[in-house]
Image (cartoon, rainbow, N blue to C red; front, side, top):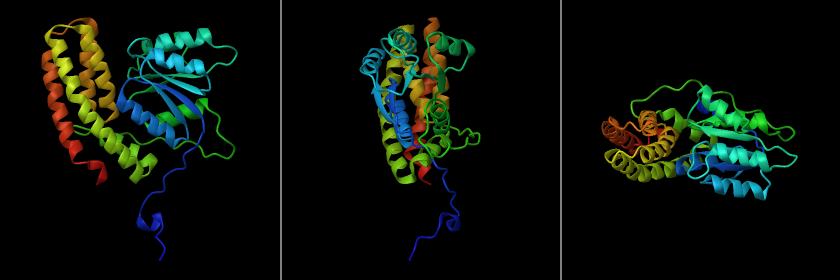
Length: 275
């Protein structure tokens, strides 16, 4: 007995996804964002080499063979701007496309990226649609390949999580495979977040703006990737306060961050994307 068609079961056909078969350099210090980016790049048929620090990214690039480079603008050691400048200064005749990974979308941020030699921007949190548009713009498709998937509708905001972020991630790779990877992502996020919040609390207590800003930036990226936008926005405020050296309100914000994490953790424990 044959399985009924998707149409008869009332399921939507997923759009065909292009397979580029290219090699990508991914410079990103957040483990959660690394997992998201590698999974999505794999769906588009790309192999990703990951570097957690700018110096490591530059060393990998010097070995050659990359068709596209993604650089987190703010990493430990050399940041993305410095790596981009170094690549542009050292490359020969061929110019590799460099795409900035950034949670900032201001005109100043874009100008800094372009001035450093970058070619494009991929906002965080990374989504399949945004990544597909970047790959379509900078990589040539094999003959007969399907076009990138259409843009998704605007996402509705949830009390603790934007579940559409997680659901769309599963949908791109198939429910079974995507669900397994998402389970791993959730466990990684839940294990890494408490010590980062503790580090934020300690940095705020001793008035260490640079340390607070660095931890907040790293955590912000992971929060947005997991759909925890309220947490991400709190981290963004803490990051800015750390950069300004004005941490007077930081302890209260850290408390709010802890409360939002508790809500997000409770929601994630129910695995709502499996309903």
